[in-house]
Length: 49
Image (cartoon, rainbow, N blue to C red; front, side, top):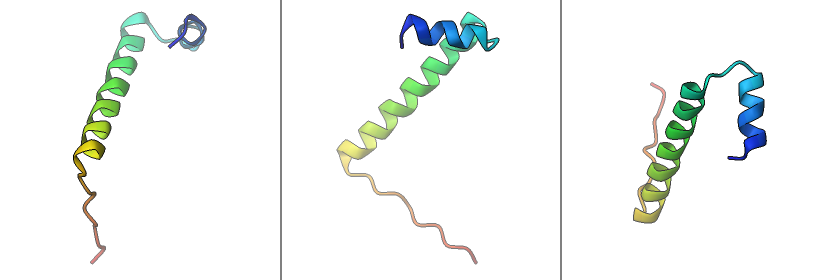
């Protein structure tokens, strides 16, 4: 995240707490996906019935 990116989000109407929420959710999903990949977790296959 750069100051330029934060500035663009503010210009788009986001408040600082909303920008923080976006950063936290993004970081969480990044963490979970990397942990799953590192542990070799495979996705479940869903079939339409």
